[in-house]
Length: 139
Image (cartoon, rainbow, N blue to C red; front, side):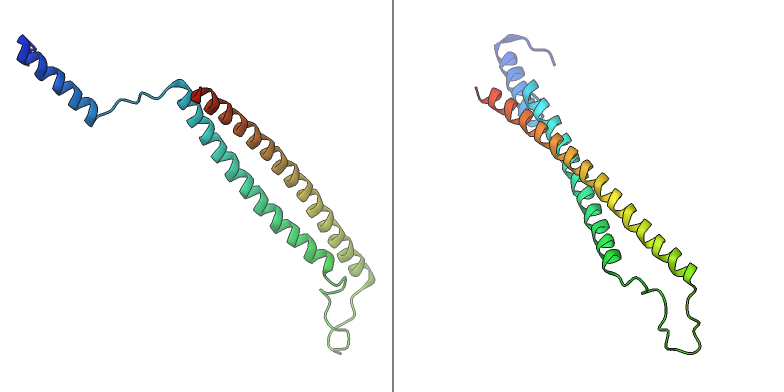
């Protein structure tokens, strides 16, 4: 359809406006696009922080249980005649294994805590950037 004459021009303008209303163009500003990208990054950081926190809590509980557990809990009751008394070397080995597990849990907790803190710092930085862009947009 060609747009000639007054009536045809009006028809073309009305058609163009209807098309714009039905299929609006993404006319977001550069600020809004940056805010959207920062918000997506913030969401990823928050999800990662939540997963890290959950891992921290699980390992903390494992460590707590290991520390509270009886040192000879793995050995059966020595009063039963059919069960031999554990050897000294076996007891020492199990005690060392327990100590090693506790140390590994402690190292894992330290690593996860550092990761969580770094994610919190990153979250703070993203929030500050979003707030700056929103203030700039409001001006």
